[in-house]
Amino acid sequence: MSNHLSKTLDEFLDLTLQEDFKNLNNTHRSMVNAVRRIKTAGDEGNLEALQQALARYGELLDRQQEILRNLQEKMPSFNLQSYMQEEFHQGFMNALAAESLAVEAEYPVYEILPFKVRVLPEKEMVTINDRVYRSLRPSVLAGHLKKSIDRLNAASFDAQRFLQSLALAYDTETAKQIVKTKIEVSEQEVLLKDIYNILTPMPRQKRDYPAQLFTFDLHRILRSGLTSAPDGRRLWLGNVRNNKQALVVLDAQGQPQRLGVMKFYREG
View (tube, one colour):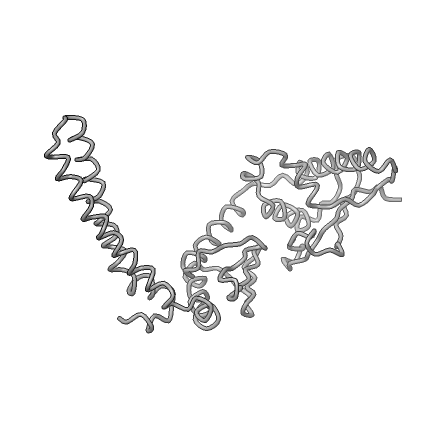
């Protein structure tokens, strides 16, 4: 199959480049053996064997360079931008159906709750809830989403405990702001992103509890209808003018909202 006929990414990788991938792999294996032989000959002091192994390694190096050149020449033959504009949509819809994932789609934006996937052809990438994702085979992308959604739904959820954690983080953040500004405001709004950072102070915690899990927990709170912390204060979530400071949170109906601030307040 000649290069310019590759309309989809799968065809390009699995047909056009397949032979080179195979050669690359085989030559690599041979090189590993040659390196082993070089080491053995050196360890044993066998200069003749060392000479032969080095010569063999040189041949394989040339071969590897040739395969590398082949791959580098073929890479520009695939137009990733036009693939993403013209062919990606159908492949992605099929891949989502294969994973039984419900989707609301109007290319280039797909709602696969609780994720929003955006296709950015000019940047040759997609974003998942605003995080860059560059594995662009539709089946790989759909598989990644399915795994993420299954993980989220399998996690048990204690709404009361989460509200208590939020209230503690909120009090910590407001205390910090009072120290910084020297102004004491009761029930002031704080950024959701700052609350998230208080809940996950260590990089390891951020890895274990990414922001999208935090937003999913906020969605589960909204869905549960429980908004009172154990001390009786109620949770309020609001929009923020600067979209960069917002998080995508699904409301109780599962519709994505961009929320940026929160507060706990006493009624009455």
